[in-house]
Image 1: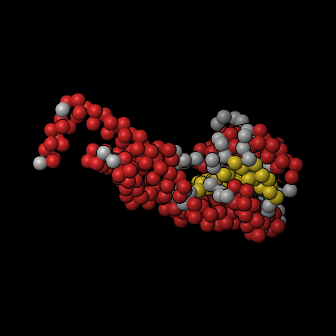
Image 2: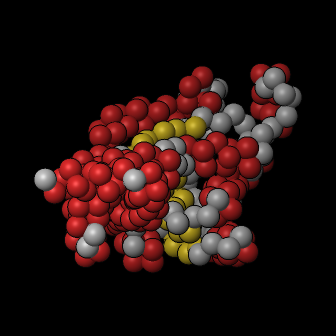
Image 3: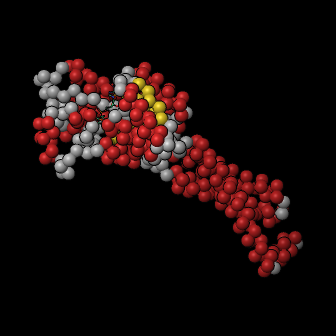
Length: 332
Ligand code: NDP
């Protein structure tokens, strides 16, 4: 079970992301700026999908509030596996007319808010040695758009921060990615003047605005990268299982003593699993998953598998008479 924190989850793209992650089996903490009722609707939608969900009011541009948000999420679920920095605002206007306050408001929420949330979650995810951070940039941050210098600057900044933090955290099992959607049908684009929408339409090959669900699927994909710990875990569990099975079979063959066989089993999986697989596993997954795949899985596989293999071996050797002659040879 994964635990996700989505900023700006009360409406639009943020709500679609909450629902998509809940559908994928994650529990959700979402924050919102002021629309408590809308946030509660997202909570109910996630709960209907079988997830636990919690809405917290938080201005992402305020460091103390961001800290309280992270604390609330950790208190609720014990960890944060996924952070989606989605909260965003626009204050459009041509540069000559743009008020300083409008420039600051957009930079504060979109850029500084993303920075503050990434800063706060980094420590948590590094400790877990697992994390997925997905930031919402925009096509406007890559291409620019008349009337949106503040918004374009904030979203271009998000791309730079994403690439930089990805380099800082990669070795700790934390990935940092961004999506840069085109125009999506939400309250944000509903506020755009019709003339601006008409001017934008010829630049969209599909000749329509995107849906929040389209973005949510891309975010969910990036939030789940390398989540296939089952495959990876099985791979890491293999050496431990093999060594445990071999030792188990050998001790049983030599002693016919079950406690000694079990001790050989624990020693075999423990030594290989503990000294080889665990340090590798912990680079890719959290400590409990690493311990599970490095110790528990090899132990079970080699106990069950080893017993069956040893049984087949002993039975075959006994049937062919080889066991008798091998024992006789060993006794001399
Ligand atoms: P909406 O305006 O529909 O929703 C914005 C969300 O952000 C709301 O949940 C709002 O909370 C929350 N929010 C706003 N300010 C703050 C703040 N200071 N602290 C915490 N939460 C805040 O936006 P969209 O769904 O359209 O956009 C979501 C993200 O996607 C934004 O980052 C946007 O820039 C980006 N994006 C959008 C595109 C589009 O075409 N719509 C295209 C490309 C990127 P509340 O409901 O309480 O106000």
